[in-house]
Amino acid sequence: MRRLALLLALAFAAPAAAQTEVDLELVLLADSSGSIGNDEILFQRQGYATALTDPAVVAAIAGTAYGSIALTYVEWGQFDSQDVVVPWRVIDGPEAAAEFAAELLVPPRRAGGRNAIGAALLFGLDLIESNDVVGWRRIIDISADSTGNFNGPSIAEAREFVVSAGTTINGLAVLCRDCASGWSGGGDLEAEFRQRIIGGPGAFVIAAEDRAGFAEAVKRKLILEISGRAGGPEFAGLSGEDD
Picture (tube, rainbow, N blue to C red):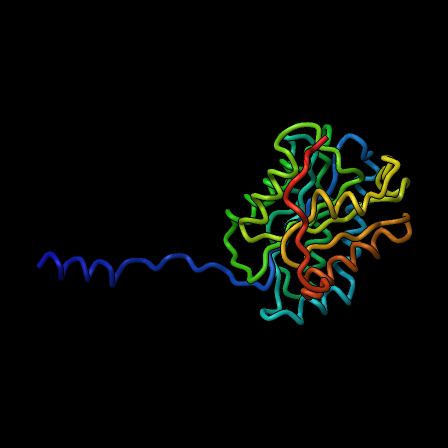
C-alpha cells in the first residue's frame, strides 16, 4: 500500500518547470569603471543596441540550431559593483532584438570604481549558472579599456574557474580614446587580452579602434559569437599574475 501511494503521488505530482533551450547563452560585460564617463556609457549602450538590431546579427541568430539565443547586458566596475542593465531575454527575431535594444538605453548608470575584471567574470558565470535557460554554448563577452585588475579576485583565478565551468571568454579591447576612454597603457591591448583575459574553445578578441567603428566592431563580434565561426579552438594560458 505504501508503495502504491508513493507511485500515485509521483504520477500526479506537478512536473518540474521546463527550461528554455537556446543555441547560446551570452553575457555582455561592458566596462563601467572609473575611466568611463557617463556620456561614454551611453555611447557604448548605443553601439550595442545598433549592433544587436543589425539585420546581419538577426540573421545570425535565425541561423542557429534553435533560431534563438539568451542574452543579458551587464555593466561592471569595482569588485562589488556590477549592474544587470537588461536581465536575461530570449532573442528569437527582430522584434525581440529591438525590445532588448530599447530597454538597454533606459536605466541610469549604477556601476563604477576601479577595474575588477576577475570579479566581473565570476559575476557573469553566476548569471549563467542561475538562469532558467539551457544553451548548447555559453560565452562571457567582456569589454575593457585596460587589463588592470585593482581589487577582487585575480583575473587568472577567475578565468580558470570560468573556463573550467565550460564557458568561453571573449573580449572587446577598446582602443579608441574618444569612444570609451580608450587604451592608455602604452602597449598592445589586444595582446594583453589574449594573454590574460580570453579563454576557452574558440576564444577571440576584437578591437574597437575608433568611434565610427565601435558599433561595427561589436556587430562583428556578435556575429562570430552567435554563429560559432570564431576560427577554431584557441585556449589562452591559465597562468600569470595580475596587476
